[in-house]
Length: 624
Image 1 (cartoon, rainbow, N blue to C red):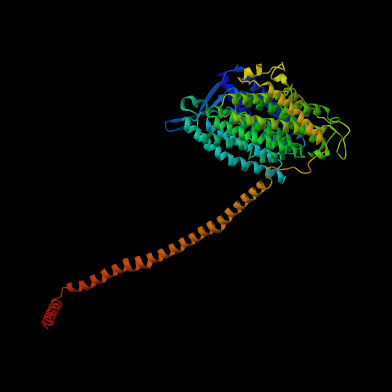
Image 2 (image 1 turned 45 degrees about the vertical axis):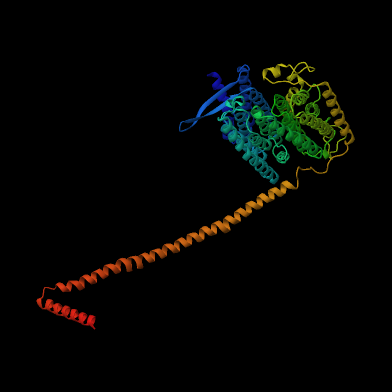
């Protein structure tokens, strides 16, 4: 009973917090950030305590929801190892983002609305990762998309923010059409609407088309190829909100779906997922190099790192990297926010030499970048190598071994690109000479910005995985969350070291080159697509106004004319001629025949003679 009460509190607290922040946003505007942070801290503490109280056990809870005839549906939730791990990530990142936002957003007039969105975003994600019933899952999935739309368009006075939000909305809605078909197909195949009751051992694995449909939905959410265009544009929202979107909520939802569906499908679906991830890893890594906006580089790096998780196909290796990536990517975005807050712009052409002005941010950014590159002593090293070990083990035990070795080759190329753009980004921001026209000589590190960045930097180190940095295959962290580790052959370590050296060497060769513009993925296709969509909208409106409305108006007028015509026919023909004429004819005939019964004898004799005369006339005419 106590566990149930804790879980209900865990589900409802973010929504209650959003409601409270929304109600008191105007009455206590000066203190709304502190109130919101306090509520977020309570939620993070409750999440950690709840998961600790489970003592490594899984939990299934269902609440009566809908009765349809003899069938009852329950709002069912499943607290398994993957859900517990992501719940901790969401609560920690959500708390740090709120702390950072207090100083970053302090001058914003709508800070209350911003904090309410953050709480709602966290609440939707928590509901999604714990969902066991597919309809609850899909509803939570759409709520995550809705709050991302609200945060991307938070500064709605900016046309770019509105366009970016619309772009994210349209692309994700297209992918979600495939998702709903996939969920219904999955439910039909396993004859249940609950993930925990789907047993591939009893009913065999699900058909490939269902897996691909689900993956298309996940591709939209995770901004994987070819749906990767919306995420860099989503940087129009506040930078702390971008940290939440990129680290623990929106894009993580797509990877989590892959983790949830991993046991239900065969190797063909897994390889399709890995192939999409490999394309995204390399293409986004290339695009990250051709950006001069710090946030857009980090956005493409997110797409690339998510592609790496997709190459893990939803396995424990993918799960492990999702957790670690959430930590260092949140740190990178908050560090970027601190840099932007300091220099008041996002352009790399006017940065450089900032290590002297913001040294703490510089050190933290170095740790985060090292984690993204997979340098030893960071958690990113173990997770990347774990994915490589998973692919290597799959290659040794699969008839599709050639495909797995191709994926390993793609992984090595992606690691070179990651080392290149990560080290290059660090160099252009902090090293070399300042390229700013009016350089700042005094440091302006804000305490509330540095605290979450410093804590995330500590969590990005290998001590979180294992106190022994040279041996992470058997760690308490992996054992507690029931995650499997994979052995990495020695030859792969040599390949890994080569990728670091080559990436840093490319940074040295291009240290003086900065792109003049930001290269956009499918820059010709997407604007044309949106113009086509708007053209279709205008065409539909024209058809509605010029065709449908005119047709309905003409039809209404025709109905009025017909009604008048029917009324005229009813009055003059039916009532006047038919009904009225027959009644008058009967009246006249009655009056005429009534004269035969006058009661006068002389009249009767006259009628007898007239009748007799007519009879004689008829007889004569017949004989003649």
